[in-house]
Length: 261
Image (cartoon, rainbow, N blue to C red):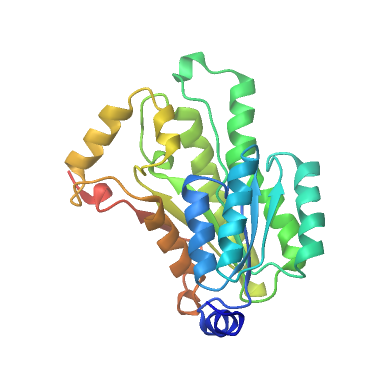
């Protein structure tokens, strides 16, 4: 593709000239979201924690698509670290149109064995990070901006050893609803995308991975687990102008798992 044809393609893209900050962008769902938004015309600020090589590889791929891309290392649960991200972001972009709070972590163990340290870790990384990111992003967000948080079915359903993570995801969804209400007068829309079982490396951390996958396939009308790209597709749809009146909702992407008996 020539430079001129690349510019023409970017100009005709649905999200041309938008800037998206995606946290946890180096791998899995975050990477799929960054690539999807990049293909739609967005320049990308790709946050990562410790996967430097993967983040640089992502940015190289985005650059080959004609997008501006920068990798920004940070712990999204640490206020000073998030401050550094936005200081660096301002050097590359003068605004943020889309914020995707995707970075997550957690502790998989029975509730009878969790500690206060485990609780704080899950809540700070999976829920309070959204507060930190939004507080700072608002200074750079125009009317029409979108904020999207990534959740999971564990926010609403009980899963083995998933109690702390599920609680943090439920808190995330509650925060997103409150932000949607507070920021609506400023023309900023806030939603959540909640995924079912997604085939990523993170799934390998579950001791009962085989049972979880088999159970999801058996119950889901789609008869398969999800791909990271299918979560990214939902994020993309919420970023379009046609989703202007979708605000404060949790969009469930699970192939129909939630409606099955």
